[in-house]
Image (cartoon, rainbow, N blue to C red; front, top):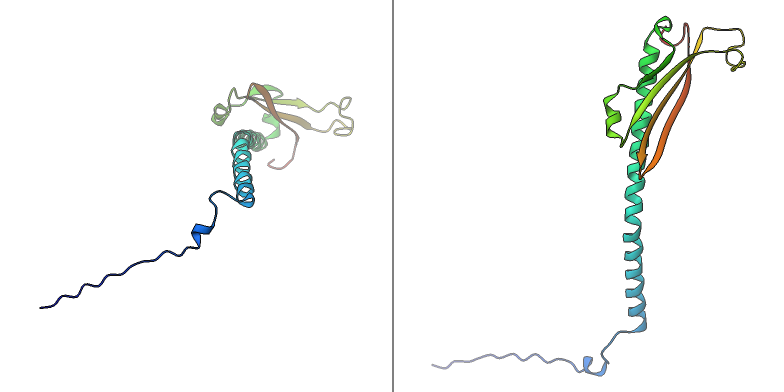
Length: 153
């Protein structure tokens, strides 16, 4: 009984032996530019996170202000009392150091001659929300008017 053994030999071409080891100038420039891009990208991440947080806080403050304005406009004009009251929305606690107030004032023809020149039944409402971001005081404020016989009257 005869056995044949097949053997295969792999030959490596001598092409690689002629090249010198090391990196070309183009390869080095590509690596340096890729590393530089990564450094710039990683350096801007903290600033981006701060901006996203600040934007969320401003958006929440505006939502609270809008809700307070809607709530006050739902009250009849006669039941709107002048003066300053704190905002009772629980979402204000989501803002760091958050606080808010609503100031309702009767229209004064002397201080607002264009708004109520004939002593119309108009009240001026100012809603202010304040909070702190990175140790700095932030504020969102909206002024509007509510008139007798207005939107929901």
